[in-house]
Length: 255
Image (cartoon, rainbow, N blue to C red; front, side, top):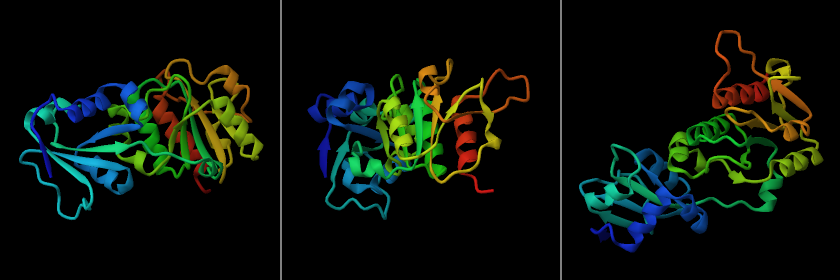
């Protein structure tokens, strides 16, 4: 176990930048997770973990597989420097962003395509919901919040380690799906079918969009069918993450 006491340590500065800047996360293809639950989820994909960071007085739980991992014991001052939450638990994991091959991508048959959703909490909730619904991968299009923003990671509750999340051009991904005869559904309020009338499918791509403006019209023009979630009460609309969950489960549900 290595000990670090100074916030001026170069590794501590790197960890802090992974928390605070997308540029650092993109440059190194790494991110930091915080707390016992997320660290434990990261250890289920141990090959991605570069190291564990433990604050003075915090014990690594029995049963965690930390063999051959770098473990850093840090002062309370260092832990505070790299923490993103108000009440940190004092344990972190320094993690590589998962990478995926072209062959793996070709095997994805159930896709969630996200267009310009800007709130990290919404993105994280959608990733978590997609993982729960058995989706093969999530693709974040232009204008989306960072998949590895600490708020996104916290909202996803470890799903980053069990579900591929990639960035891409949604026009291209729609075209790729249709070339493989995978139906593409958009989410829309006009010229759309109520989601419960759509037939559950073993293969599909669902496109959902921005909190205020919805899915880009050019993307909707590419879809095979557009779906809506009816609003029966006085609310103007549903939160995009909630609507996404309803649509996903409507499409995967076996009747």
